Image (cartoon, rainbow, N blue to C red; front, side, top):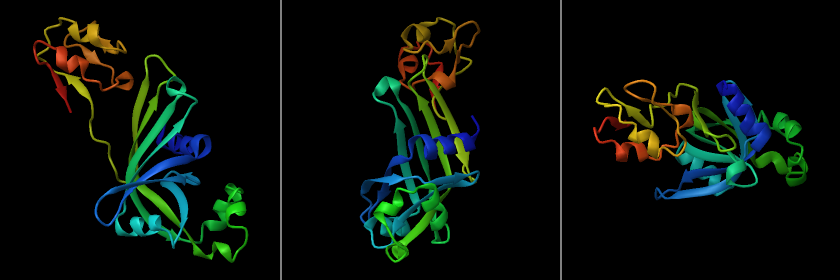
Length: 206
């Protein structure tokens, strides 16, 4: 999928996320936050200026969240994002209320909405993790100027073709028809079984 499709899925299919910020002492704090809109450049949510959450966002622009959809682990799709936020003010509030009409029950009139402000996650890297499929499906995406770092396990030219890595791979996501063998990154759990078992130390963790 393209990045915009991942952002759309977060907003339209999951919506409620668990958000992580840090307090003034550098300690992690989580809270439930609805992601209310998206476009090709990022994600949008709102909060009240009187909340501790607002002060944490203003003190440190770095955030992370995880959004999950599914009744149990094996029916679950999870999307995680690490990024940066900026306050863009109240101008987008009427649009967010139109797209999220349940907000009218929380802030029922214009007067009560005067404390609200909108934030944009303007850059970020994300990971899509789908446990509904076998083998599992995982993909990385990014928006803004953020670029995902290479992550996971990779086979080098030291590979001797013994195939022990395949025997221990829980998802059988290693192509052993060639040498060096190739780990199919889109199905890898990042569990490290291949790394631990390789006798030639041919697998790198990045």
